[in-house]
Length: 261
Image (cartoon, rainbow, N blue to C red; front, top):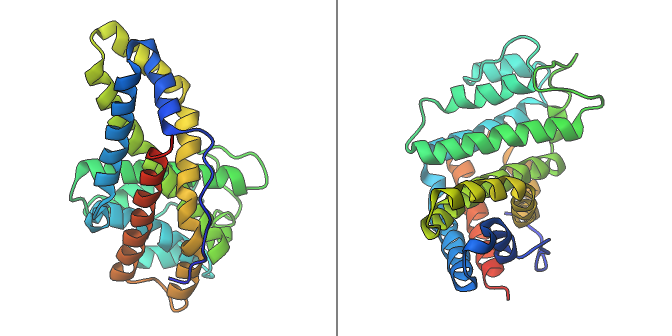
């Protein structure tokens, strides 16, 4: 896929340390180790063959389409021709809503597509925040609403956008399974309420580590995008192949991280 070799990726914190902080003092060290392993393995299990889910595939295809459209003279008309409708002077929120509309008829699993769409919406918001010149809220429009997206129209930009998506997708599933595993280990409603507060407090740590894990996708995303968008939109099979490779690399990285002592 035109990728470069990468060394072992750094992590800001081990997952076990983060999960231990979130669980508080109501869970033993043995239970924390078990929770960490189960959470990571559950996420890895979900990532196996998830590229086959129509909702996940459609969501990522949406991001690819936006990146390709940004190179067109009239991106809005171009997107409309492939089934993505946006209002005049679209805002960041308009793009996020368009994800849901685009994927609405392509859902196999509400769980998979829900987490994928949330990840895409958050990636869009972060992309805008990082790439616009002036302060812009989700409800504000730009003079050229595709100015920000033009920065994603090449391999260098697309690999950053895809990393945001995979980072948020991973974060979503880590939170999903972590909450399930820790809630099962807690004995009272009060402890579960406190856990919810701890989870909220440490959400940035989960997000940061998930983003670091997703860095592995940058090693091949740029080359894939440049190669497969020379003549327009990549085929469904090509996008599915990219997702298979990306989620496979994410599974390997999560396994490596969960094995660290």
